[in-house]
Image (cartoon, rainbow, N blue to C red; front, side, top):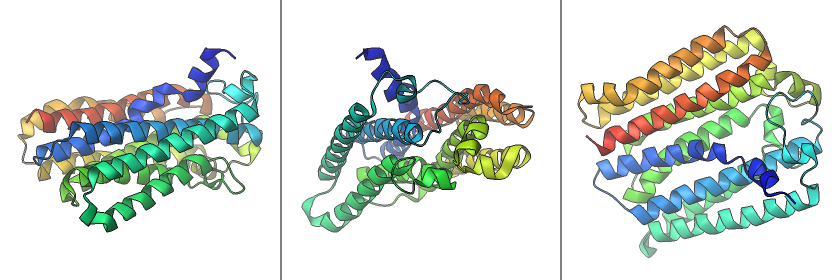
Length: 302
C-alpha cells in the first residue's frame, strides 16, 4: 500500500489550522503568567490527532454515501481513488480514535490536580464530545454535516473549546480575555469550512449533503461568508482591549491577517462559479492562520 496514499488521506496541511486555536489559548495563558510547555504540547498533539481522525472519518463517510464522485472539485480522496480500501480505513479510524482519546485523558491528567476532579470530569466530557464530533461529521446513521450543522460544530470546537479550553487547562480558571479570540477563531474557522462547502456545493447537493452552502445558494452563501469574516475580525480586534498591549504593536501583528481576510472576502464575493471558490478557500486558510499566529505573536512579544 503506497505511503503517499496515507499521507494524502491524513491531510496534514489541515493540522496548522487545527492547532492555531491552541496556540492562541496558550499565548493568553503565558501573557497571564502561566507557562507550561509540556501541557501546551499535549494540547496541540490532541488537537492534531482529533483533526486527523476527522479527516479519515470524513473520507470514509463521504465515500460510503457517494458524495466523493467525479463531480468533486477538490483534491481526490483516498477511498475515492481506490488506493486505500474501506476496511483498512475503518481500522485506521478506530486506531486514531483510541490515540486521540488517550492523549486527551493524558492532557487532562497533567492539567488538573486531584482536588479539581469535578473540573477534570467536565473536560473529559468535552473530550468525548470532540471525539464524537470528529467521527460523526459524515459517518454514522445521521451525520450532522449532512444536515448543515458542520459550521456550528467547527465554530464551537475550533474556536471556543480550542482557545478558552486551552487557557483554562493552563490557568485552571476561565479567562474572560479568551472570549474575543475564541469568537475570532470561531468566525474564521467557520469561514474556512464554508468556502470548502461553497466549492463542493454542486456535488454535495446532488448527493444529499445539505450544507449551509447548499441551503443558501450562491448569493446567500456569499452574504453568510461576509458575516463570518466580520464576526471573526470583531473577535480578534476586541481581544486586544483585554490584554493591555500597545495599539501600534497590535496593528503590526494583526494587520497582515486583517488585510488578507478583507481581500479574501472581497474576492469570494465576486466569484462567478462554485469551482472558483477552491482558490479562495486556500486564501481563507492563510488568513485564519495569519490572524491566529499574529495574535499569538502579539501576546508573546508584548
